Image (cartoon, rainbow, N blue to C red; front, top):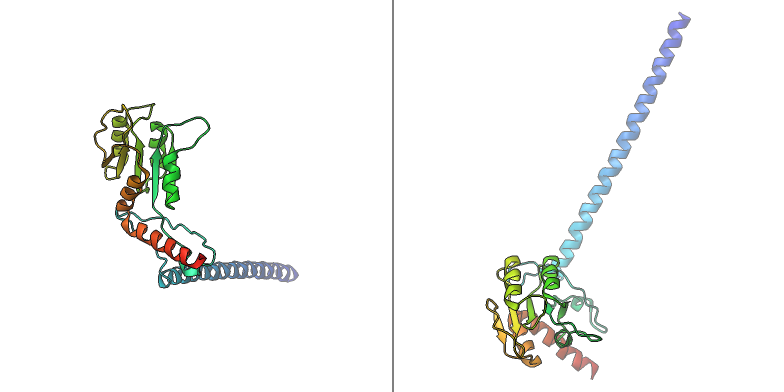
Length: 215
């Protein structure tokens, strides 16, 4: 009888331990579930606020979703702190001790620029940043012909606008979307604006607003 009582108490002790372990597991599962619910609700709230405030993802003229670019502007309200600025790849010849003049010209218009100093760099840059709005190519690049570069870029994105800037002595570069006979900053900027007219209009309106507020 004593042996039976001892074994019964042991079984009861094991049952108690099993029940406690199950309770702990259940509590942990409940906590995880609650954390997941909180995370999902938080995401829904953020998306809802973005939509209501007008900061939902926008689509450019090529039909791809643009990344949100947050640009802090002193004196501007929170509603005006984000703008989709067009981004262009500039393929230019490399000179010792200087950077691309075309890059500087485009950036003065408050457009984003990725610079490549060879055809090979340009190909790799487009693979890494496929959502750019266009490419500005110096027809006098040295590591490959302009025509070969255009062909390689078309193989990555057949619809990408390609602007070729001719240089003295450069050969005709077939396959480009637009051609400029020489590097004229005003003409280049005007052409870039036609590729992204809505974004260009927003940037010009912002510049006018800043000019008025800073006077």
